[in-house]
Image (cartoon, rainbow, N blue to C red; front, side, top):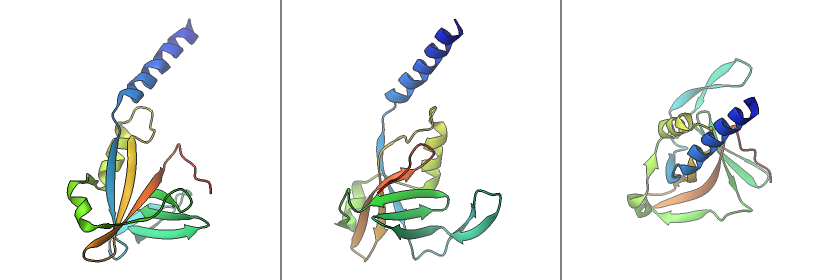
Length: 142
């Protein structure tokens, strides 16, 4: 009986999670920003770092905004250079929106269909990274 109750409870959660519409969102990434945030290293220590950080490792570029990490795989997609006008009809969100959606999600999986990070490279051009959000459920491999 306990197993049946547990099965019904879990299936309800999975059905609820699958019915939520996933959305495509765009996050702005500004390497020139002087904003900082406090970042913990996992052992209880914390330090103040630049809000926007980027580093490369093999075929991956990691784009970090405070504590949230996103990975762009150079093998899987091509970096897109776009006109800044493309932002007009795009759903631009901030990090708080990402965190809010994650906390609202019952199963804590990525609630987004697609996440793009936008980096301004000139007054009229942006780079559009098709990224994978590295959260509790996702691990990145080359």
